[in-house]
Image 1: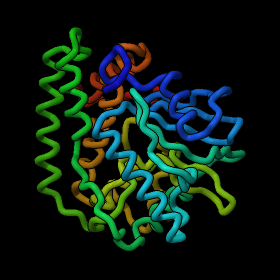
Image 2 (image 1 turned 180 degrees about the vertical axis):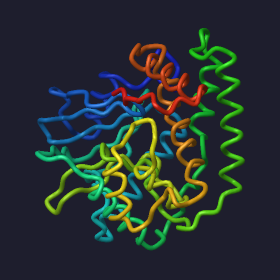
Image 3 (image 1 turned 45 degrees about the vertical axis):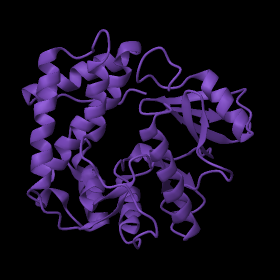
Image 4 (image 1 turned 30 degrees about the horizontal axis):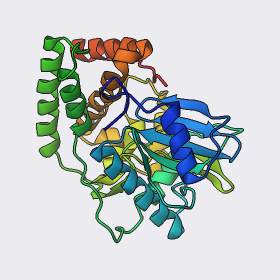
Length: 301
């Protein structure tokens, strides 16, 4: 379905122009903000942000969920989500599924306490009146592995592919055997400081691509020591503001390890055409396979 020559590649400027035209926005001065799970562009003229993903059935379902969830939250008066721009969404053009959002720029930086406050409010929201997708651990990683297997020149050597497949199976088994004291409900499932933007009242969450019905502990991974080396004072402040210490729970490493393995999916998809993604993928794989938790990971946009 995608028009890109490389399977798994993100949409580019042609798809952006077509999606903007279909939605009635000017893409003339578009500026790339991120290029990882989605291609995200700022549109300074109309004061908007365009988020584009490949036009697969999975991405279309996800985009529909994002629009439904964020519109419902904001319509219900819950300030935990940024509302999408009004108009029919998502927008589908050849090669891309697009959603459009207000452009927000920050003069300050959010804190772990800001994030914890939003998540505490989100987790108190009643069940929505529509069906949410269920959390499926490492589903996207398995899709990326299948994609890579089908390439003429796979990114992953056979041994690394096999290790990731086996490790994913181990973690899914561990997840299924875990108990979750905070219960299940609507979760953001990708909650971190990069996904906060300013509003008149403070901060709110963006990037709801992974929104689902799942264990609330998924949203508390900011409190877990991980390969991004979040400073301990920030992790402690997050736990205090939320009112729960994730690392007191015996299964917290299962969710951390799932999140870290899950993060490889975007880099597997992008590696053939993006050297920085290929380098970061190699770094992450090496540190995971050797158990080296001192290696610092970096998000590649």
